[in-house]
Image (cartoon, rainbow over all chains, first blue to last red; front, side, top):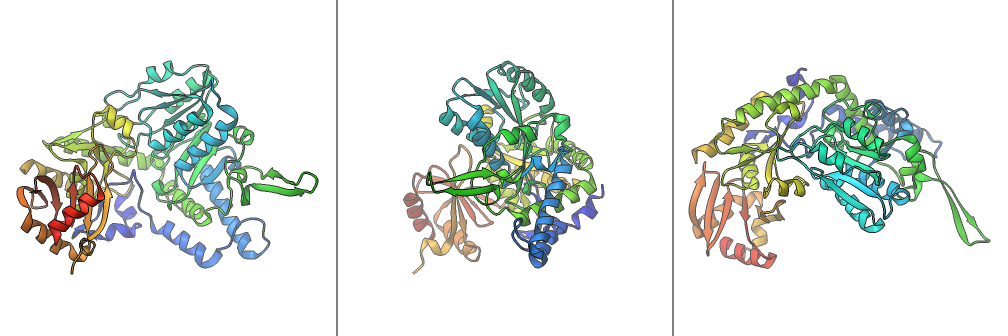
Amino acid sequence: MDVQAIRQDFPILNREVNGNSLIYFDNAATTQKPIQVIDAEVDFYRKHNANVHRAVHTLSLEATDLYEKARETVTKLINAKNSSETVFVRGTTEAINLVAYSWGLNNLGKSDEVLVSLMEHHSNIVPWEINSKLRGFTLKYANVHYDGTLDYEDFESKLTKKTKIVCLSQVSNVTGVINDVKRIARAAHDQGALILVDGAQSVPHMPVDVQELDADFLAFSGHKMLGPTGIGVLYGKKEILESMSPFEGGGEMIKEVSYNRGTGRCGVSWNELPWKFEAGTPNICGAIGLAAAVKYLSGIGLGNVLAHEKDLTQYAMKRIAECKKVTVYGPKEPSQKCGIIPFGVEGLSSHDVALFCDNYGIMLRSGYHCAQPLHEMFKLESSARASFYLYNTKEEVDRFIEVLKEFDQN
Amino acid sequence: MSTVADYVARIEGTCGAESDVIVVFRYEKKDEAIANIMKKATLKNTIAGIIFELTFEGLSFRLYTSGKAIFRGIKSKTELTELLTRLLL
């Protein structure tokens, strides 16, 4: 993988911040966009912009074609059986909410249980907490070891015949820990439960095959994989999606709305999959941009992206050990994780660290990273987080370490 | 006559148990804001000439050369505005 050639595709990497070359280490929050994605979006608005479906004019047909081809591109990426299983949503959060509300409506009641882990992003906790109050089911949390890895024994012991769905991130957005979701999927299915995989931090960084994982649902976001914001994907097995009620009403999700004078009401029938879950005018341009991002990543190969990130993480972990005041949280063994390194600096808050690094043009995230329960478990007020992607380099890591070493002088 | 709003672009609560508040100074006024604050507050420590740990009226806070300040233990927006008025004007 030629990282220097890849960097040429990202115009933003040429800019300076506070008089220094930009080093972007906040990829777990969002990623930068290659010119191929930017061009795809500009091209759509310059040449093809129209609303999709249910029109006969040329522009609408072109827009529909591009939008549906984007769906096919994403379907291929995750190896779903059929593009009807690929629903475009705003992002991972909306995808999980869709499942919690729509699937939960007909499948979760007072005697049921939902199982999540303590390492989940708030987006895979809060929708279940809200729906637990609405529907009365019990929400259980599986423990996480103090090194940030999942306690599989605890997870499996909390999985019972009452469990209707388990919801687990494939990669933690705080520690980068890679969970064995295939093992959890098997265990869930053995108990008759479904599995929802939060792929927000995995799909952008490694090959993910929904058939191999036997995932019932997979949620991920476009903006974390070089694509635009406001577009994401919910994958669901066709038979499960077909059994679900729509999440939102109006526009694209409708087949027919007919007023009955006798009853004074409208009879409504739903569109087919996947449009049943795509109410209103979808984010057409976003989907086209996401497809361009998927093609870009597929061209490089997600296996190569993962190998690069693991190499960078291993290097960074080794070099961070040279910094006396820095403590890395989560697993110390780089092979257990993706390119995410949470850390703290003695005597400073995470925000101090992030602002200090910002002064040198290094973009880090600080805070809870939307995972407060995990921070509480680690007994941390917050953490600083460096997260890598395919365009980051060892030279950038070296500069980062140089900056972190300044804390040792003070 | 200058106001706090002339100097401050944005005030944001940070994410984390610290409940810190970040004050972001307007880019074109940041040097003036930093100079005013440095005149009035007492310097306790500095890290690499980038982070300045200061105290003012018994309150510790941090000022950054990039034009930001972090305050901890501020109870309300009014309290912060009054503090910034005394520091900046």
